[in-house]
Image (cartoon, rainbow, N blue to C red):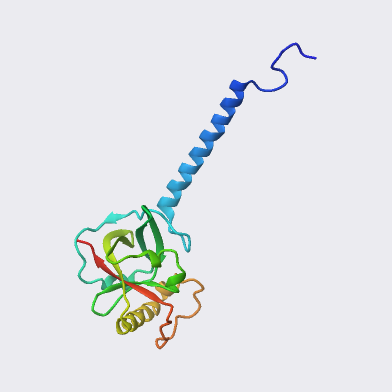
Length: 187
């Protein structure tokens, strides 16, 4: 037997140092994960946090250029925190911008968009301050759906779609479960 009274285990001070060291290492991993997540996401179907990029403050009158962008990302505030997702966005021939939300009532973010909901839209690394409003007019919904289908005919855009396959036919009917939001520059 040992005459050393602490030989049977670590002293309370040593145990405390080990626990604090593990907690500090865990905190560093969590902070690093949040930083990576913030910079890299939204990723495919995984939502992100804050959209970073070059800020574009002047109002946009014609969003037609969005039809050449293969990936659109929207950030809105939900429960006092930023929430960003990848979305389809499409401009009408008149230059109005809309974002698409398939089966909107089953998505986390779609039902949480309120009237004149502030958000941020990222297109090709540029972030635009915007306001979102759900579109409910059936004629406008059909017009925007047609713009969406036309945009999906572009190979570089369609390639980014889940389960790509062939682009949808131009006469594809609009599903009743499809939601869209009008996007306008926030001034």
